[in-house]
Image (tube, rainbow, N blue to C red; front, top):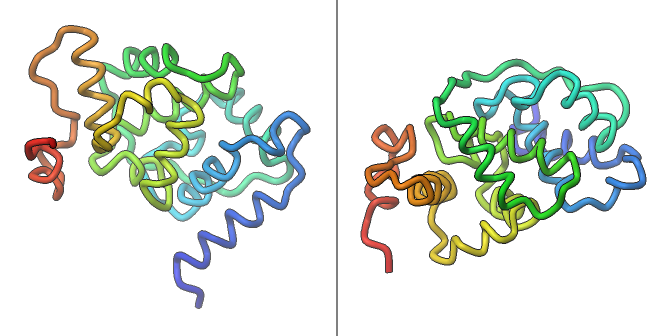
Amino acid sequence: MKPLRECRDALVSELLRRPASADFSNDPLRPILASMLAGRAMDEGILPATLGLSADDFAQLWRAFFPGPQLRLENGATEDIPELGDMIQLLLDYRGSAEPHCAWVARIVAVGCAGRDHLWQDLGLANRGELSTLMQVAFPALAALNSGDMKWKKFLYRHYCQRDGIYVCPAPSCGECADYAKCFAPEE
């Protein structure tokens, strides 16, 4: 039996071998989305089977990036958060392109913020570096503001709260996180 990492890598490779539509074949988000889908297929993260998108948007994303048979994806343990719309809008305000897939990615990331782990884990990604790449590609101006390399969920919530004048604002899962002391230590 293959170790989980090898299975994940094989799924990502299989997705990336598919001929994407011309507009998306070299898109730098394609490998990140492949990793996210592989994670969801392996029951990693909290996203629903449509990654938080409507069924129509998910079908469009799939056809654009990975045409062919869909992976079998199960629903994760996502929760509703009252600030979902505000988080989507924050990300949309910083998106690097008006392309529809940037709006899809904004929604996916915002839905991932409802999880109880680090954002890269809640999104089903393989590592934090993949999330950093996603943020730099999809939301470059916002990513540039994270000059202290703050954990992404904490950074997004802090930015959201500062923008809206909210002064006490931990991310929804901070109190339960094993890295709480690291995230909320003084920043240098």
